[in-house]
Image (tube, helix red, strand yellow):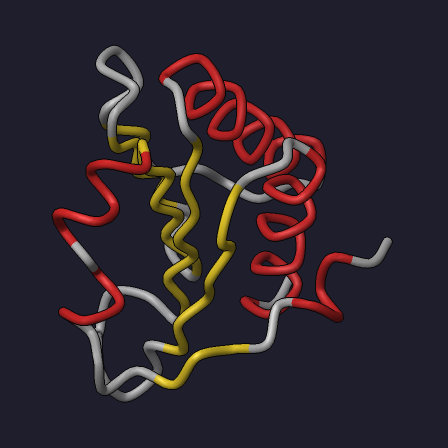
Length: 118
């Protein structure tokens, strides 16, 4: 499965779980570790955990290997690394604080709207 299809799985999982402000950054040429960052947030820890679990389950159901998941216990910032796509599921406060979009300001934002559809 190519990285764009993996990104689509992640976006769809986030959308299905009502994640807020789903953003994808094209990291090709900016980072050697991944093709895309997916960033979203929720307003409480339970929803952060549910979004992360939905992404992980969607990846596994579609044969996408998850290298690691970090932050699941605290549920304030969960990182799901599937090599080609690294998903950052934040609690709203942490997202504002870390502001990955600003940190990776050279990255082109990907329009996720068409990726939300089945």
